[in-house]
Image (cartoon, rainbow, N blue to C red; front, side):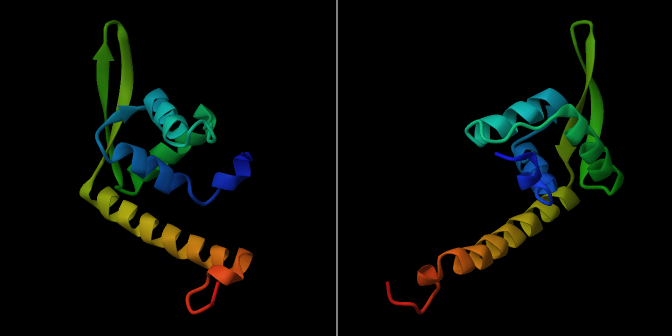
Length: 113
């Protein structure tokens, strides 16, 4: 899948994979890849600026965790992040319905198959 295919949807993807609980950066990348069946491969240079921005606007919180000698930053949703995710899901459903009605006009409500 083309990298530009996720443009405009990255925030929703990040918020969605963090919904079950906190994850560190590489685990976020792995979760997106796994949940997309391998179709989406995010780069660290893409997600870290987005995670930092989402934290700045209050949708995420982060803390440092230690695993052995390694320290890694873990991100989790805030209440505002949960509300933001709900908004992202609503916007996604509206977007896919609109695109679907253009690409497959026979699937529009009220059209006979």
